[in-house]
Image 1 (spheres, rainbow, N blue to C red):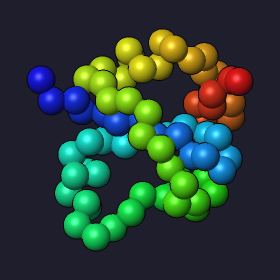
Image 2 (image 1 turned 90 degrees about the vertical axis):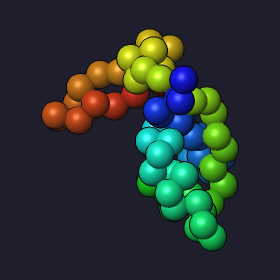
Image 3 (image 1 turned 180 degrees about the vertical axis):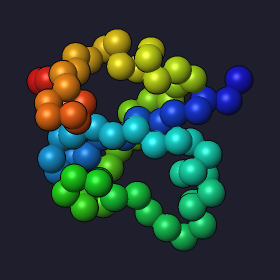
Length: 72
C-alpha cells in the first residue's frame, strides 16, 4: 500500500513537519525541500506512514491559541 504522509526533520532548528508523499513526488523535478520554519535546506526524511494518527501517537501535542503545537 502506498504511504500517504512523509515526515521530515530539519537539522538546523530540529522541528518536524509532514508533507503528502504525492505532492513531494510531483515537485521532485529539479526542486528541493526547505524547512517551513527556518527555510533551511538541511532536511532529513524521517518516515512514511498511511495514517496521520499513527504518526501523532508517538508525540504529544497541545492546542495553543487555536494552533496545534508539539510539546517537547
